[in-house]
Image 1 (spheres, rainbow, N blue to C red):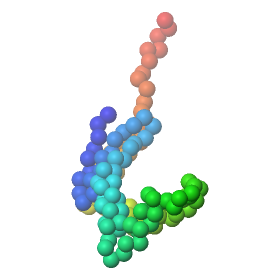
Image 2 (image 1 turned 90 degrees about the vertical axis):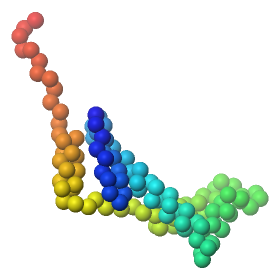
Image 3 (image 1 turned 120 degrees about the vertical axis):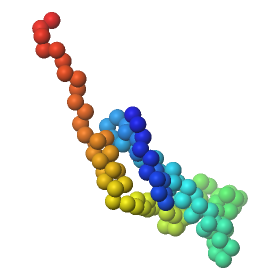
Image 4 (image 1 turned 45 degrees about the vertical axis):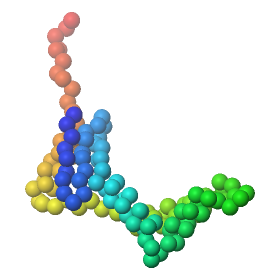
Amino acid sequence: MSADRIDGPTPFTIRPIPGGARLEMDGLRRLVVEDVLAVLLDTDDESFWDRLTALANPAEGATADDMRLPYEELVSDLAERASYRVPIYGRERLIELSRRLREIAAPKSLPKQDRRAS
């Protein structure tokens, strides 16, 4: 099974798998990590860093249940600031991407069997 690399501002790979396709979003993964680090290291707004530090060093006697809501809120707030779009430029590349996805999704025929009685 061959993989198709989609280059551009945010590269990714399409790989056929049994029953479908897998999008390997390595370019998007890097963008998300960079976005999260940028928010955490923003010296003009240290609230995210403070919240992360509070989660890493919970108050004495705090339970996992006590930390669940602050954790979920931080995840949600960071996710709002993270990249989630992958632009694909060029009509030709979009047509090729569409062709490749249709090719992957097309039902595969079974090899013809010999109909002679054995």
